[in-house]
Length: 182
Image (cartoon, rainbow, N blue to C red):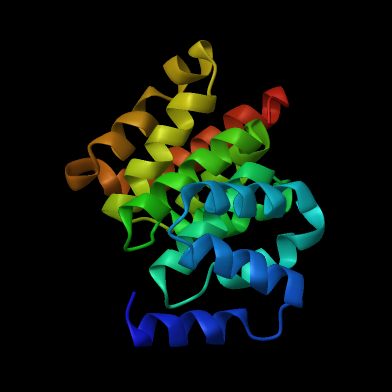
């Protein structure tokens, strides 16, 4: 880790309580994997009370800090993290996008409507659509997948059909809202 990375991390951690700063630094800087895991476990054990501080770290310029914060938020799986995870589906770092998708899956079906609304409202790019497809494949029931086949196809083949995803998501929202499945 270079000097600029440490400077970005220090800026990102500024204003957090000392106990969080020390645990996050242990997680980021330690070369001992047991100490790293212990620090992550302690942060997860703190639970929902630290979610607001972790959400702030998800905007960090430092990819490692963003990734570790996302991992802790994923493990806590608080529904308040849904919009943050949806934003991270477009992150430039693959691992962060994957953690965000898995976080939404872990939160469960409560993630479906906000995700569909994001797709409908044009929050769409090739990498976002790939993550949305993965999440929907994991959370939708078999019958829902059949009904929403065109949405899944548009997200899966977004190079050609991606423009139809907002329309398909709008239809999905209407269909699922009528059945009160979400």
